[in-house]
Image (tube, rainbow, N blue to C red; front, top):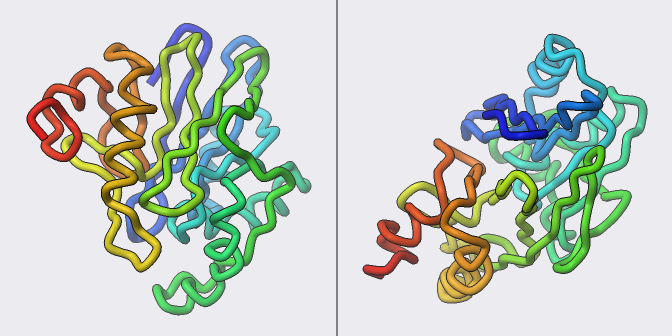
Length: 218
């Protein structure tokens, strides 16, 4: 997935086929890794083949398939900072080792971000700025990352092609997630390309029109 100054490479990780993304600022070849849920050697091999320099790790939320490999990747890349998610997902990040044992992902470690993020904050990659929006419901601290210059949204597990994030956990909030998608994501514009945490990318316009959970027919 290539845009004007941003290249997005997908590395599927974990048994959940999570879309770990390597975002690269094309002019500088500086990169961030988003949601390294596991399979760290596979991520490192992709970074090596791309020939980029990874400066940061970004987390959209605290579930194991998104954050389970973050501590290991940070260590392997010389202690680069981890940014995100929102602090309300701290209990999920603290509980990653237990979840790892539950799912057979035994390399999962607890994660303490170098910087908690919140709605209205910004993060950067080269001269690209990403704005943070808090979209709770899948988890209490779920965030999405929006770059207006490339009309690109990292959606985590908030929105999918034809679906939305699971909300059947004890901390889930279906109505809250639907409202946040409709009031925060769709106003970004129909032309925005979004990358979900699982499955293919799409556009907000397609989901606004056709998604049975949050679209015009919902």
